[in-house]
Image (cartoon, rainbow, N blue to C red):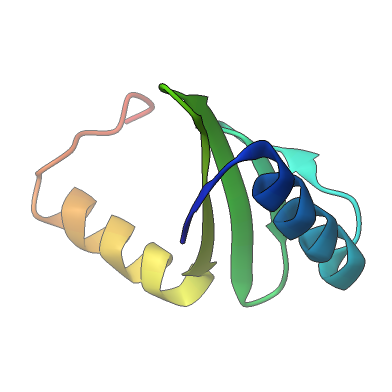
Length: 79
């Protein structure tokens, strides 16, 4: 979900905190990591203040990541 405007973003962020507790720092912004879902918010500035609020299935992300590595589309730096 794309949110625009500092008041809207602050309100949505407070609702995430109310529902999921305090966030942790993720690679691109703040994250709330559960057992099945990761919620995140990424803020950026253009002409107005904007933020993306996302919910991601951890199982789906793991499957997609495995597919990408298995197909050789991305190579691991560790291996």
